Length: 373
Image (tube, rainbow, N blue to C red):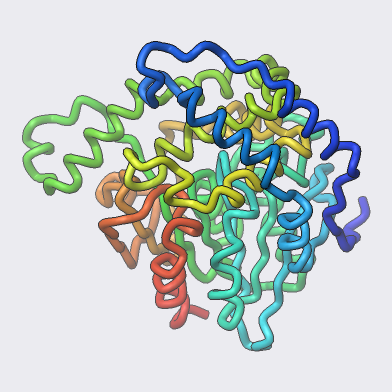
């Protein structure tokens, strides 16, 4: 099979953008449920405002131009097309660093950190299989291990024998897995948003040894399972059925993603466009919409992950974890799977750290990798 790496440039046909305009103009909104608040999902009054902005002010061509400033490529690995950005540092001694996004994010998550990292790192930023321009998937089985093997192959093709890895959300699962499949090549693992789910209920004597912060995080994990787990249940059992609505309706795709941006940005009670730029939020949605990958992204993100609840092998690779205010990592439950040499708690920021708190995230990454080689 060809190992060719091909230059890539985003160039969406105007017909697709014209079709989007028609669909947005003809959106049929549901009747608002009592209170029209976030407790029942994305409020109708809020989404109407975002859709109107999307239709009348947002420019995909501007976003496209911003993304196209960075060198982009595609290659085929294990039968799957993989899209990636590859930004080489002007410093030839820079450390190669592989960045992996999550769901419902995209490679666009890293737009703020690229300028802050490229002096110290050669950056490789692939889209997960089935996501955006790496989609859709051609076959089943793209769990974190298979993705990790693909990432190791990608770095080999780029000529990087030794490299670091970083990621959040799904990227926080894939990045340590790269170290497990290639422990002799990965110099360090840095993750944000990592979470190990202990066996509930936690015994009283064990609970008493936890700090107040750790107890709060575990309480929020339990609340997540009670109140927010529905999207995982749907995407991991009926991704094809869900895809019909999301691929056909741009507003459906917008609402599905915005629900999570509101829940996972920090502080939670603040609407997401007050934390993250509205244009960026729409660009992230557009990557899913224009590529029609809602179904394959859900399928890869959840349906194919068979490792939930299992204790993974510790690679022995030095690992750093940064936990922002929204996230719920507790060190003692993560230590069996990771060689944690650095742990950072941050009292602000949410799940989309590269966009919400890029300076804090970058400072932690830089400090961790500066002495690794």
